Length: 323
Ligand SMILES: [Zn+2]
Image 1 (spheres, rainbow, N blue to C red):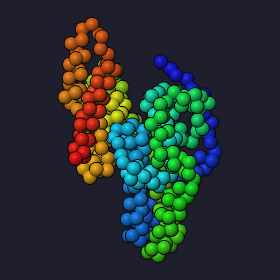
Image 2 (cartoon, helix red, strand yellow):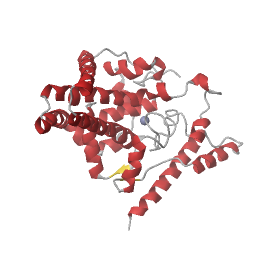
Image 3 (cartoon, rainbow, N blue to C red):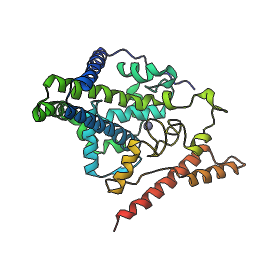
Image 4 (cartoon, rainbow, N blue to C red):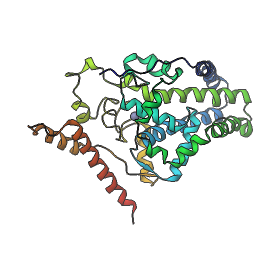
């Protein structure tokens, strides 16, 4: 099925901003390696990690896919971390990501992997929205995001929040507290950090091309059972079970820095209700599908069943915090 979408034009302010960010970001890397003090290097890595957490744990796994629940304090910190990444409001990122999932690999998908890595990762972010983007957006259920106070607050005050928490405070800190020259702070904490995090935010949508399995590599090409049985080849698995908190953004399953952090955040009560597809429920659902001779059960039915089971298990696990 081909879904057509309106023609998209280059947004010259975005092109100029990216051009600056790429040139000055690379110059920032030079400053990070050869000029900056150790404290500035450590501080730079710390805020890059915070922005990374805001994108992967916050925007992607929490807000876009609701793969777990977070208390107000955690959401507040994640919202600030996301602001540090400088990729625009959470609301806009989540909307584009949900459209990406719903219309995956079609013309309506802004990050259509069929057009190659350069388009999916880079060029698409320099283009304006298609003319029918608003119409497409209306078909996306955003009620959970619209009722989220932290997402609303960040969208409402994004410019002020970004100027204060994304630019002034972090760039000023090295000059203020350990006498780093302000130009080095600008290149490392400003441009280098934003350049890295811009690419992290883009990579979540273009990762399929790097870590996904190509259609010619499996047989039959439309068979998805291998991914749900093995939980392999992220993002092929992620596009089938997007609500599973364990699906790592950049390859692998149940591994990586973000998953490690989420496990510990749950242990200390910052997050709860983590939804994950258990092997037993997948085996059970596939068995029911295989003995269903009259085809009254579809593959979508079994995915719903696995999700229901994961929600039940997540709710049960949450009870351990009730005394
Ligand atoms: Zn996703």
